[in-house]
Length: 133
Image (cartoon, rainbow, N blue to C red; front, side, top):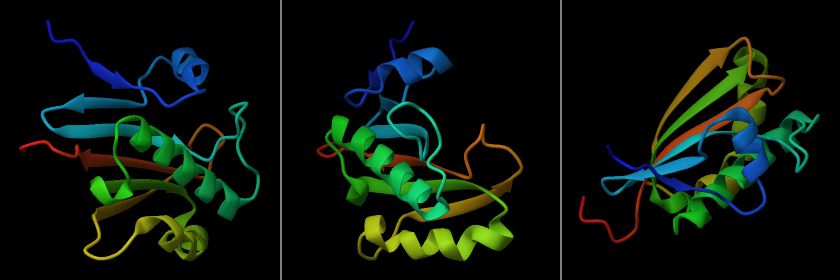
């Protein structure tokens, strides 16, 4: 049986334990990061949409940092968004604050109807620094 090599950022263990998932798993030179939302420290959603997007990226960056990565190591992004017809441009106006320089990772944006009280979620795959893959 394989043991999962889970990565946890500081201070958010209760959130992950309550919902029964790991924030990220290292495997074969890659880091697979679970969807990160714009939650405050208490787990509640940030009410302002643009601030929710920023918090999602900050939560993502905390997971990446815990694994020794940064957004520069990200190779694939999936974004889930409530009402993308109305919110996509607002979200994408925030993205350059975190995204870095070209070449950019691949990206897929999926419109959804439910995100457990959130409006934006981002999950990524990153190449672990120093891996031979």
